[in-house]
Image (cartoon, rainbow, N blue to C red; front, side):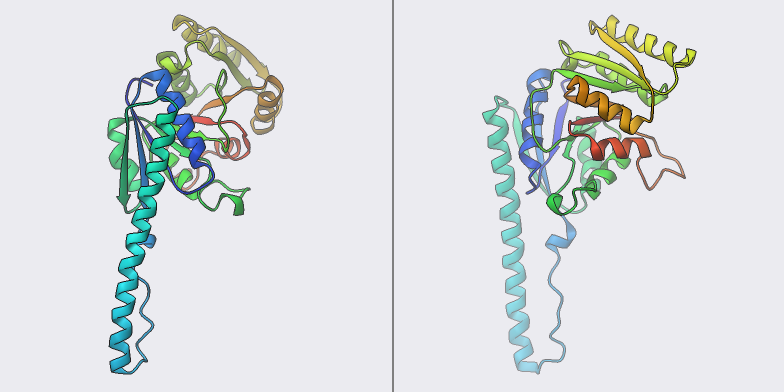
Length: 285
């Protein structure tokens, strides 16, 4: 993570404050600027349906005028609400000590917006769930899954509550995305001075041992001393247990790339870890 802009997606959910606080924490460690983005979806901006077809001509004309006025008022209020969300978020980030904070209110699809703004960003930051979080605790936010699939930049998934991060876990499966995650951490000022654990789940094969040794050497060359472990069991349960036992503050792992089979879902282990993990997750392609 270089001194690129952090794009933080905020809404009216209970995760919004955590998104802002994580953005401020990252910016304070990397020197990045923060841009807070709120997207008004097409449904929010869409006019109400016209059910007046059976009404007599005179009354129908009056009603259509009233409906048009209500639509205009509704659109104005939705826009004002979006601006208020951004203003509150900006104040929160600035209170945390970050001066370079901008805001952007957009209309349209959130994935299309991210595709446009991520060109100038080094990181996309989003809450685990959206405004319906309390009604869908067993599910990830639909926008999160879409953004992780589509984004070409690292995606930081904020947990519900913020706390300062000092211990980081890298889930290492020996694949290309795991190597990229290690390289990302080695190059980023964010991880300097943090305690880092690199963990593989499965059998202690020569390949697994070699992969951990290479990861440790890469981090050591960057001035980051890491501990390594091989855990038995399945990744979803073993990693979650390890996070709780060692009291780790963040998980870094690879997100699966595109393929015909995986085009509609994130990799199953990644999805489960983001869903169940109580700490923030940084996903690297």
